[in-house]
Length: 83
Image 1 (cartoon, helix red, strand yellow):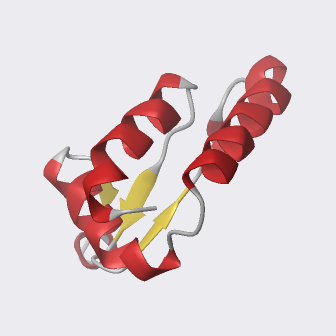
Image 2: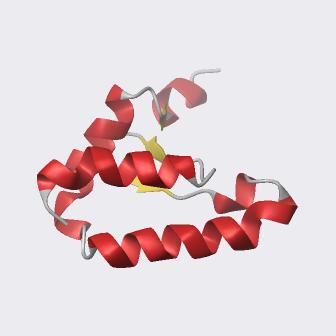
């Protein structure tokens, strides 16, 4: 994957119904498990196909997280521990 492909990658993942989310400022997760049970297998297969098509992305982890955060798709651990 190239840096300029990040917005398209994330848009395609979201379109599957997979709630991709940044956690803090340095990781992100695919949360197919949070999808309706009847959609989990379909979503998992679609997400895998997208990931295979875009290729390796570990080198872009921080950029992917930053883009997710810019979309408001993040879970901030520090804010949760204050409650």
